Length: 366
Ligand SMILES: [Fe+2]
View (tube, rainbow, N blue to C red):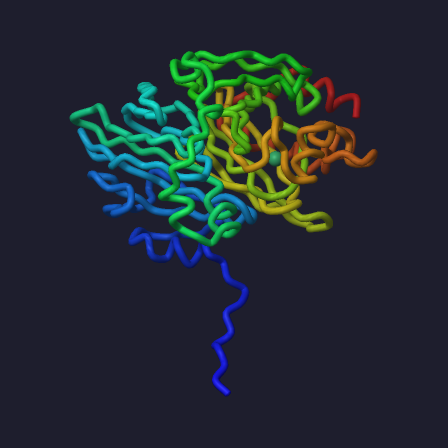
């Protein structure tokens, strides 16, 4: 009797991405400025691309880099997955066309972030005639393609989601502030023109001099937030599930990573242009060694509004700034390894930056 060859352990997304005709890279972190791109048939026009898969990306999201040469553009695109776009270099514009003819256009530059409303038709343009424009997108395509395992449903689907477009002003760099409490304050919009100058809210419980905002972009389940580390400070160590993709936006510094019980730290030095993602339940801690505040954008799947997973509910609920000894996810100053402070003092001395005196006071009382 004839039998069918067994097909199992299928990952429809990984099978699909291998046919895209652009590089598919995997690493702990990337310097996205240096990722080689090639002509990208699906994005069309003069777009070039490469997929960059972070080891800590989790099961639901991917990342790609897209470069538009001077004066270049993509073909029009639409798809039933969410996408958060962070602009690495250059400047350009994006047009969004909804069913029924409603059309929006906005101009972006290095340091902008925006979301593409679900299944809205869009097109990207490089508006400079001299410089290339490069951006990176984090999307939940792996989740969607693996759920439906049908490419046409994702890329050739006429269903409109008009409620995802939001207010006109959400395409103009304006938004709505939704106050909650430190670490949970939200800004609802589709487009933030300039992350380096965006106003943040203080969140000292995550570390002296910390500030933060949670973005609700195009009413999506994709999450984005921005955090700031003041000069001469660092954030407390913490851990959570995978898929927080970290894009440094201003300043520079380093992060330490370790598994529970591990004797040594793994260190990554970062600056704008980098991308890394702490893997599942790995402790990590971010340090600012710059003489100016360091900011980073974090993008993940499962937002503070629509957290989706138990891990994200706990993270955006009380977990992120609650002591690990009482069920939270954070290591308080009094419980941190003294070596962490020694490494930081050393790193700052190397850069000629002083430890924040208020932090020294905290250390003296430990
Ligand atoms: Fe984290």
